Length: 448
Image (cartoon, rainbow, N blue to C red; front, side, top):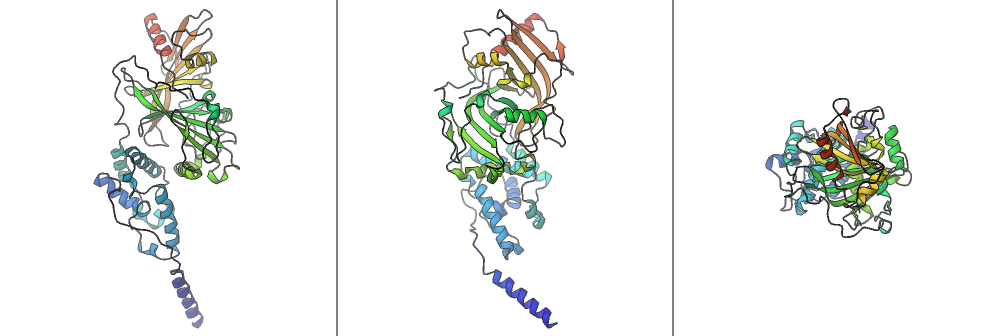
């Protein structure tokens, strides 16, 4: 009995001593810089997010005592550093919107609130109906740009100069700029309603081969991605094309070299001058934090278009990669020239080309004709919601493939594959001529 009392006394004394080791957490009431959202949205954020992602005090009684205090303090400081709803209102509207979309994606993918936090704070769990309210408020497809006045307007910005890619500065974390990225091949494409951009994801040879074989769990060392973004521009016919160049981002896999950043090197270069994004080397925390929900897929959001068969759900976009073997060319092995979206039919299309066609289209010489041997291929897919990113749409099942080929004399001919089995379809000569004109007049997406 005496021993038990002594042990109890020691436990109480130790617990009391722990309370003296109590590093502070700064709390403050709401301010004018708090993000301004409708009351139903704020109630959800306050219940499920403000405990960690705001300056307000929202701790449970048991969080107030060490050692729980130490754990909660670390969570709060980390959370505020990434997203603080008490100060978010001071940022520009696009930055606020981007933060809210990232928050919804974290919730949708089960990364937030932290599972260990929810285990002790079940009221912070986001109910499905609450997530639906957040998504309805963001409404990613309600702010699409309007068609331009004339169909003849160029969909690409005037080039102030052609960047010397070999002279672009490295990121502030030391990641070098991949000057050869324009010759990489496409892995996927994304229509982003959250920020009104179109994106093309290219991969180097290591990445492309890994996607083709399904060897992406994890991605092999040496794999590199280039994620290129353009603002959307809508022509008079309602098609959404790449407009002004926004940025190119790189992910470079090297599990040992980049062990501290989830095995990947990260970099972003913005604008036509390709200025490094980071203010300092610590900007990679934004990258790793955003990609953390995809740790099960080696931190990669992109679903590569591939016909490979792999175990697991939503690892590859095999639905988009299901082109028939009977088509005359391996178009998915070619480089991409441009992309566009047709909102009316919920489709997206990519213009591919063989080497001769790509070189010609990127020469930007509208007065010349397609060179002999050039082949263009326009692949059109149905769209579907991106399961990895709320506000994004990606290719789904292929709807059609159109070929435009130049013979030895420079004469153009067209072939069309469509229908449920993507079999070759005969078309009238006027339809063929019209589609050849449409395909060959597509403007290449601007690359620096």
